[in-house]
Image (cartoon, rainbow, N blue to C red; front, side):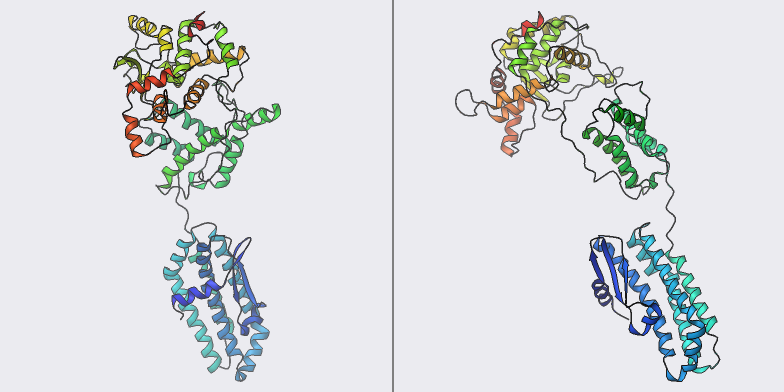
Length: 542
């Protein structure tokens, strides 16, 4: 018997790489070519993975050599001169039995290849090597062939049919050790997804629940409900293809009960703009979390939602405010039918234009966040705990860098912002912008002003590329265009700290310094934000 290293060397040579994948090639020994009618065996291994191809080739090598051994033994005995009569009998009467043995081998080989698509090949080969049934099969087959040898030498009247039928019977037993185990039952996806939410939702916000349930609902609409283990990459692909065809405004109307397929059909008919790749990627992220949860519990075989690519380029490129659009905004009266006063509107726009703060950050400024630090009035962007009755009042800045101190510039002070804060305190309001309320499913304070501002600027002819967040781009650009050195120079770490950016310079020295930026330096940054002379916050109140 060949040692393992020798065997490995032999079947490594028999691996042939083709464009369609690896194939197994083995020469048929000369004495038995007549039986098989072939000089070589070529068997497709249905994989481009070399390691997997090696395992499959090893199993096929073992099975094929067993067939060769049996046929060579019988062929050798039939070739002896003293057994010419026996050979003639077998050639005439029993050749179908040889054909049946060969056909059985080819059938079992086909079964073996089919099973590679159903289970992990390495596990299968480990079972084959260790399986007592395989050892018994090999021993019984060897014994039967030995009996045939003895009969051919010692008995003139042979019962070849019975002995060959026994060999064929052993080949029938191959099915018992090559048949894969039935896959473990798994729950329906609809049940599994609910169990995942129940187990994983500690600390989730309402928006997290809604996001997961939306992804689950859309997935079921696209591919239906079945055992979670039975979903394949084809299902994930179908989900992706349908979701990418959704109209960009889908889901905004909470009363819309149309399914994904119906929405796509309508979008195709009206030739509507499609949803962003980022939105589809978010759905895949949710589904991937569910699959990862069950992969650890051996209830799925792999995570079918990883490895996909998405077009996440922003469809509408946001740009900073131009002087033209700033003029339109400053000269237009805020005549929107709303509960928000012109004064509140003016100071929200004013704070955004001079600090670059995000809209929700501005709307959540509490009266206690306005603090005097080293004689400089500042907005402290910090974490706040919610109450039992109103948990949505909890606030956590966007990142660690988001928690910061933002000095109030002289332009805002001159416009009367600090007086506005004092009036809010006098009303016993927790928030500086007391007219705002928590609205929407996400319980944001910025919902109403965001809609009002969007309507107002659209009426002025300001395009979709310029939004409230564009003030942040404006401030960042203006500050970074100021040279770092010389009088009035601003260090990049000061600007990053002022805006709540992580910053690109991650050296230890700069990281430590960033945490200890002096408020006087941040005040320099605040006062360095300069607008054209026509930009006067008080004009927004008219």
